Length: 118
Image 1 (spheres, rainbow, N blue to C red):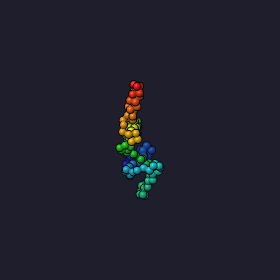
Image 2: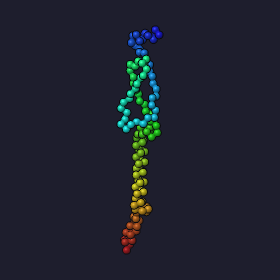
Image 3: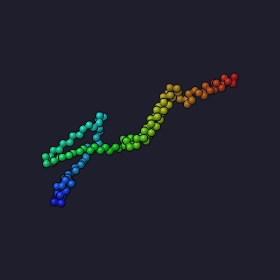
Image 4: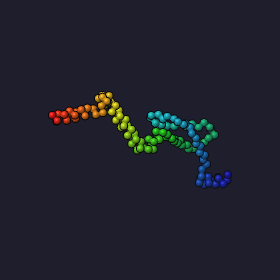
């Protein structure tokens, strides 16, 4: 102990203890965000001079890709959404105008061609 006391006497070191642990797992954050954290120590033998609270998020699944691969997610999401939009418009137009793939363009061209030949 005398060997460890010398640096502390001259101010070269400090007696400290680091305690860490997981408090909460898989928590759903509120929409407003996390604004404060309250930590209570209930043991009178514990003397606290400095305390910090670190919050670490482990993103999994879709949230991981949205955060770490944001440009790829943007491109992929844009392509998927535009494809779904175009398919929806195709379905709506088929319901409104019938199942014809050409929407009568061939018939109009045939009529124009027939009129030109006469």
